Image (cartoon, rainbow, N blue to C red; front, side):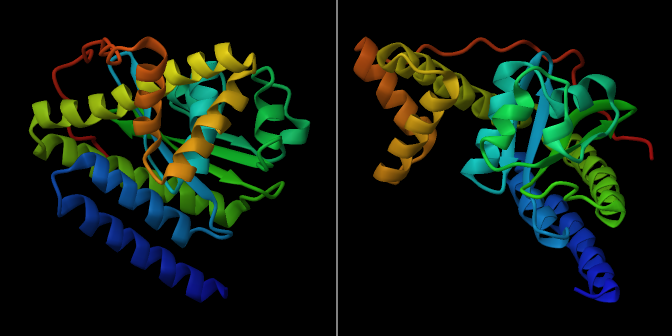
Length: 256
């Protein structure tokens, strides 16, 4: 793609991001659209996932597909990785070559095993605090050049402003329900993974892949398969997860 064409596509994408978020009160649905638009306007069409933190809870609430969700969940569940580092420090984290990365324990190996060679996590800042992270995964080493990194930074800043505006406009109870639904899905998936690990004596990654394969075979959502797995093993309905309350009553619109 020529530079002029790339710039035009990026400008069009930013306009589309604005239209998507401001046209709907459904924050989670808007973030899914943002993930799809982001991968389309960036060179190489990287996989994209968006993680949000609400109170003490962290969840992947949008992605470009099941594989991107898996990549996000692997390091959220492991407690280590670029996304969590970006959330904790409110600073971007660029990992251009996972084969040379020594941080975060076995995280680089787990990503390489799933075809990821480079990762970039860009914090979504509202009033100077990281409320989420825009996470990008490339199959190529040094998959994000300087042009792509500038585009990612602008996209994340734009997304944070739109996210702040959407949260301000949305009814807080509605927003909380949407994010808690995403986190409840993650809790069910975590429980099902634990059951499969015990049944098959396998590691977490293999258990997740098993669950995902069942989802694809049945052509139903991963959380539905997780719930069925729990009911089959326990004979009861899955327990409702506990949520930590937000540290503040609502997110204010960010100052840019």
